[in-house]
Image (cartoon, rainbow, N blue to C red; front, side):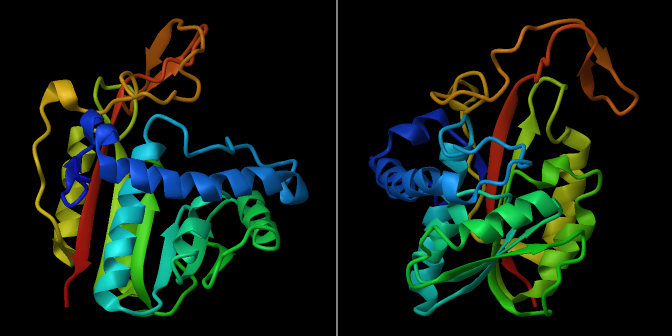
Length: 274
């Protein structure tokens, strides 16, 4: 079964069974293993996030989706690409993209994560490309129309208002540049992007971008979620407890927990308009 990533829309559980996916995940695991092996040489003691991000419920799909589309764009352009990673954290994935021969600049608002990634660049190979870490907020410290491609892996759903960063990514991409985006979607009303916020975000995306690949409908029984994924979700084994719904609609634990609710993951491939 060929890889089925040349689409936009919800991730499918059956995507994990395709031969194309298996090839992509194998490529990613090579870099992930090296990153984890070198970790003692650069790991910052204050870095709070999980290190083996690849083998978690959605990242195995998201990173494979990203890698597939970056590889397609490299072939299409036939040259080294200038790429930005928004909200990168300190993970192995930018090194996978750099090893395709690209220059990757990673932006994050966490100074510890940026410092950790900068240290990682001294120990983890980037092949013929390069990886650079920079601290940023909603303004990206990079020139307008200077990037060929931008990607963001499950970051926008954590922002109170993602519209300014969508505008900023539009600013830094060249005309015709590619934006590959994934994000968690709320399935049961406890976390992730709500329907209202999803429509608001889509409206802003449509102002600046065209869909490179049309959305494909996934049958509900085939929809990849944090409950049916073959990979674990961090914190899923915590004791469930009494939950409180806040004024914003989010669910927070009062006793026990956390009860993270159920998430799906959405991916899209966008081309910058004039």
